[in-house]
Length: 371
Length: 103
Image (tube, rainbow over all chains, first blue to last red; front, side):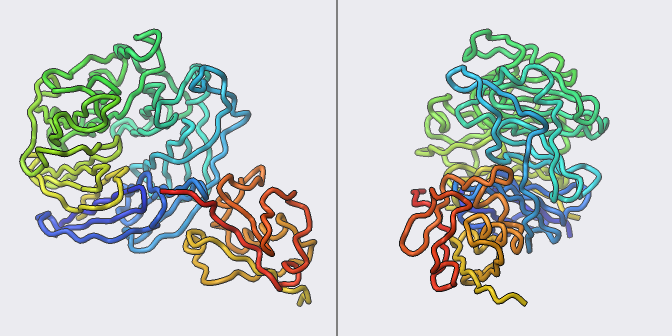
């Protein structure tokens, strides 16, 4: 029988939560790597037994872990992330040039085809790749070096490359997003890049329509239609129908268009999900009510999803990498909170239930649909 | 076989778990016993510790790691300075410690 494996990264370890295809009886294993920040855990689409995890701490820096048995056992692999050539500088918070310094891996994106190939998005913003299962990492320097890198500035959470998407129909095309630089696209397997931020409008930067400097929180696409991109920006939910060449706002009737994650239904390319958060200074849901909002029209028209979610006194946040969808016939939606809950819906968001509670603050949620 | 005494190294719990070490590590070092030679030998035996105690390239101690021995803080000593005789003889361990911090 098919099943799902939910991979949860938290501030104090990783958890693997599994269920069969009915998704009504969940088993939790963990914490793996207890005490460490686990920014992200993700499985290979080419071999679901192969998992990668980003493990880090203020004391001991970065570790990358790899599993070949679906998370039952793990081995530390390579953790050396050296920027290519002279790293140069980006802008610091005070506007002065600041040398690029590796801090941590925010996001791991395994190749669609090869379990041994995996991309890493890091802070300070850069893109790395390993083609030997994580043992060795090389930077793809064309992203930092394309011309605007020296003007990038960190957001409050650091200058992180947090989104990596490989176009499933045109494998040489990749998308990345950086806080607070914006979205970028490569059409040659990550060798060269260009900003794709036309149409973004950010009041927090001097030139509100600048080519770079936008605090993009997350990008998502449906694999059948990769020219259509959805974006949760710092403020504003956005959509592009031309692979990022132009963006338009689709916030519509959302109660607030600030938020972090955005995701797309596995079988309905026009059905998307966000979690509205009050504001950039109030990182909790409006009115203390945790609501996922769903649009079945590709944006503009949104409906709140509340069944099974706390509707009073709820002041958690949902971070940018903490939402995922499975691809079972009835699409499952998952998200984790900074309060340590992981919620799941087995009916496309109509109803929700916690599958884990009282975990450390959740940093990331991924899900694997198992045969 | 070397007659050099075994250098005793104690790691913080989170690094013992990472390297799957129980108790102390014992290292045989024929070169002068210094922070650098001890850490070189430690990382050669446990490659997963590379980058977790000191920087991969500069070899500088990570900010929140401390080195203690014989009730002294050696964190700010030069990497090539000799460690105390009691460490070199194996009478006392070289302690690698996670700095105190909350959270």
